[in-house]
Structures are given as C-alpha cells and as structure tokens.
Image (cartoon, each protein chain N blue to C red):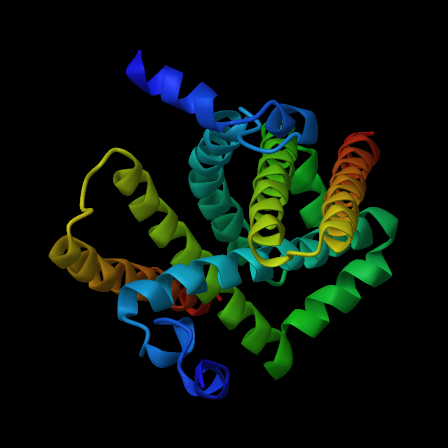
Amino acid sequence: MAGKKTKSKYIAPLKKAKGLGSAHEGVDHWMAQKITAIINAPIILWFVFSMINNIGKSHAEFTAWVAHPIHTILLLVMVSSVLYHAKLGAQVITEDYVSRKCLKLFKLIAQKIFFFVLGVACVYSILKIAFMAGI
Amino acid sequence: MSNQIAPKRPLSPHLQVYRLPLTALMSITHRLTGAALALGMLIVAGFFLAAATSEEYYDMLMRAADTVGGKAILCLWSAALYYHMCNGIRHMFWDTGMFLEKDQANRTNYAVLMVAFMLVAGTWVYAYYVN
C-alpha cells in the first residue's frame, strides 16, 4: 500500500507515454524458451543418433528414412522447436548487446525473417522428401 | 584539478579488470555456442534442401562431411551442441532455485563440462564403431 503510493509519487505519467518499463511479456518469452529446450534436448539426441546411423547411406535410403511418418513428424517438430528456440535466444543476445535503438530494431526484424525463412526451407524440404519418397 | 585527474582513474570495476571466473566464462560460452548453433541450422536447412533437390547435391554434402574439414566442423559442432545442452539443463535447475550457491555453481561447472565431454566422446566413438 505504502509502496504503491510512493511509486505513483515519483513516477510521472511520461513513463507510460514513452513506453518505458516492463513490457509484461518476459514470462512468456522465458517459458517458450524452456518448453522448446525441453523438446530440443531429446529430439536432437535422436537426430544426431539417426544421422550417425545414416553415414554411408544412399540418397534413396535417406529419403526413405525421412518419409517414415514418425520420422517426418519428429523432424518437423525438431526444426520448428529448434528454430523457435534459436529465434528467442538470438533476440535476447541482440537486446542485451546492441544498444543503438535503430540498429537493434533492424537486427531483431532481420533475425525474425532469417529464422522464419530457414524454417520454411526446412519444412518444405522435409515434406517434399516425405511425399516424393512415399510414392 | 578534478578535470585533469578524472580521466586517469578507472571507471568502476569493469569486465576488463577481472579475470573471468569459470562460471562467467561458461555463461558467455553458453551464449556463444547458442549463436553458433543457430547459425548451424543453416547447414541443417541446406542438408534437407539438398536431399529434397537431387541425389547429386545429397552425395556432394555427404562427401564434404567425410573430409577432414567436414569432420572438424562436425566435431566442433557436436561439442557446442552438447555443451549448450548440458549447461541448458543446469539452467533449468537454476530456474527452480537449485545449485545457486557459489560453491554449487563452481562444482556444477565441472559436472557440465564432464558430461558434455563424455557425450562428445561417446558420439564419436559410436560413429566410428558403427562404421
């Protein structure tokens, strides 16, 4: 109660007008990073294990492996989760280290586009292999 | 007077005057490996794209991976991956309030490094064993 009163006494409405202060979305960001991390750890281990087993395999063998429905789904989950996790992490790094506002905004937008395009490329490729090899 | 002296004084305890303790080094390494792994997704996307495009591109990438340079990149990649994974798991414990004391942070430094190293070694031993 007392804290609230002191706060309003010292903080001018200009703070709200300028949009300074917490954006109230930190928890969502943190939570999304943790959830994707929980998905990433086992699925990446599976992917690394699978890629080692793929050494020396032909193109046909690899595409047949990708085309297995469970593998297709897991690969799609993997690239989505990993790229989303990467996008969140890159965002934090930029927010922390790039101090010029204009450059920061540019980098944040560029990163979003980068990871989005990468995601589309991965999803398209995996689906194309899955549908072509399946026929 | 004060204007002449001021520029020669240190600002305040700053990054440059400290020898980074292992905990701090591992923290920045977590970010560096994270950034590197994010860029590594370019290679993963390229790999899927190559396989989706043609047999030639797929074979080309597989041959590139089998060279000394390719293996070196994959080796560094696996080290970055396992380090980031192990340290990330430690971050999850930290989020619950565990291991936050200084000596616990110091001890878990070595635990993270050891487990990550064992995973890298295990992966490469497995890779050579399978082939």
